[in-house]
Length: 171
Image 1 (tube, helix red, strand yellow):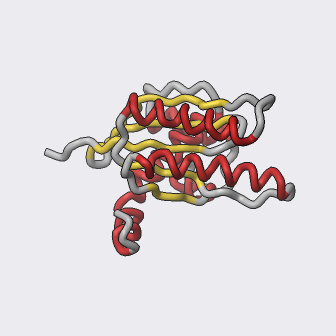
Image 2 (tube, helix red, strand yellow):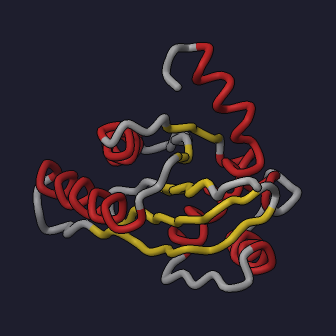
């Protein structure tokens, strides 16, 4: 009998970082939990990053994922916004890595193509397909729905990602 693998998907953002946890047994997906970690935009950057770190740490402690996946950053026209997103993404990579997990990274277009079938899907299409693939899923934001989509993407591509990480000496 195949045992379940628990996957944490993270959609990084400085204001809101979405997270989603699924269990994967063979090719069967099961919703576990999802939510959003928010930072207070009235605080300075360092304090906001601590809020994201602590929030994701609680998710890790509560749900005990065995694998994690984070969406890769796209380059924004606003360099300052891109840099801040990159810093939030660093926290999203750091928290599971500190727990000893290998962290896979996926381009936004691959996540959309895997979940919806097209790399240029809209938010409402992603939400709809997440509900089809995980009928019991509940999410409080587009960020949480995107995080579940990232976890689903990892479930579909994890063999290839794990192989790449092992070749690099990470897995």
